[in-house]
Image 1 (cartoon, helix red, strand yellow):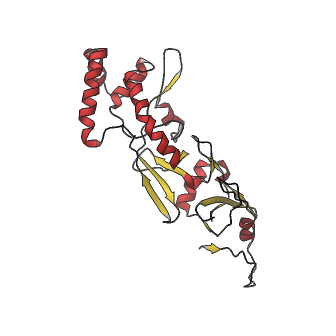
Image 2 (cartoon, rainbow, N blue to C red):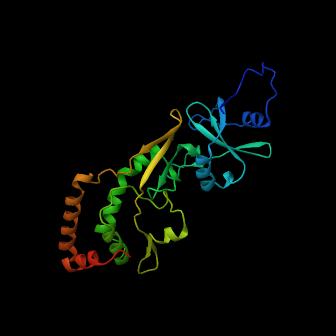
Image 3 (cartoon, one colour):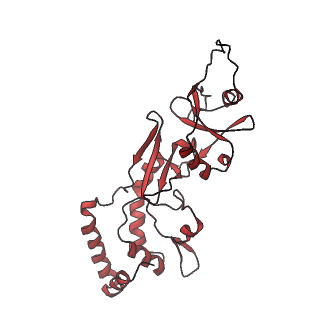
Length: 251
């Protein structure tokens, strides 16, 4: 249940719980001004959300996860052994210190699992402007033949990808999107996300976030766009090579 913190002392005469004292003792700073924020309320995170943070952050593995309301942002604290500790996350793109709830969540499959990305929504919006040209480069100016084959066989990619912002869940899955070039350097193959979402504090629910990369064709134009790209590749690299690669099973 939502526990409203009373900043005017404790007129009701109720004994504060250990958790309430520990949460009140947290120092939470505004990410932009550095001013200390007032804690308005707190509540235990539902297990469905807590599980996602437990997998993403080492410090969330044990203890009770508490959502701490400071107005605009829901912060996350771990309550364990009578102490509360604030969970700090970092945007991998802007390096800003954030609450875990300010990071975009992603999944690679419609069945999940949902995972916490390494980027905030503003950073993602800036990032999606440049990612499609990165994908085109992997096709038009590939690092090596092995990566070219893989990217070509995957077909047109219009959803955002990034091995740092959206790491795969397992080592095995990570390796499935890597090849080595002639010099033994690891090349990362684009792995488009299936879905993105961000926590909306005022709604108490997730908002979907579009996965579409800026500059990528819309679904209705995708087939013609890809056919046009293939035609250009047949002219620059030879029709036999392109058609041979496309005829092979995706491995």
